[in-house]
Image (cartoon, rainbow, N blue to C red; front, side):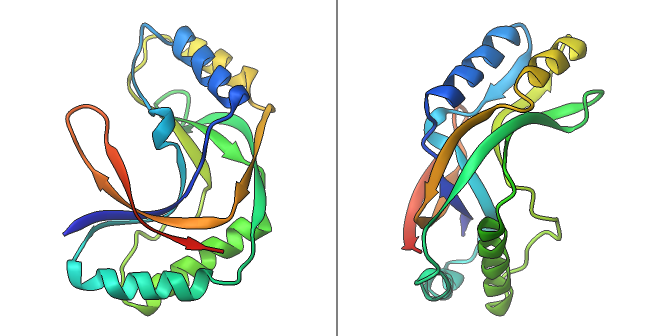
Length: 184
């Protein structure tokens, strides 16, 4: 079994890195697992533990559906938390609405269903996870920090491939190992 997910790689630019640095500094007294910049990505589908026999059909499906879709761009914009400010769990940066990104996700989800890979039934909410909150002391301070970046545009991301990753959990930083990439 391999723990797999399908994602778009994001190379954080200067604006995004500065925002992350500002958040880390402002929240340094809190218990937050910050995402290592090399691990930043946009998850299109989390497959979880996947049997080895499903990997070849997965490769074939991804190659077939990705080929010829065409490259596009997305814009990283805004910030927020998942759950809510009363019980925050995830600090994120958003993606400006992109019909091409939504279409790509729909095509991948339908392709996964066609090869009988079961997924959680959740609406697609494209974002970059910046940090996972274990404990926060000052929720008002968190809200104030997040609101500073709520309407900020951080960078334009070119999208030219979809990557199948293996997630290898460790005691420190999880390793996201690219298994294969599929050009659009």
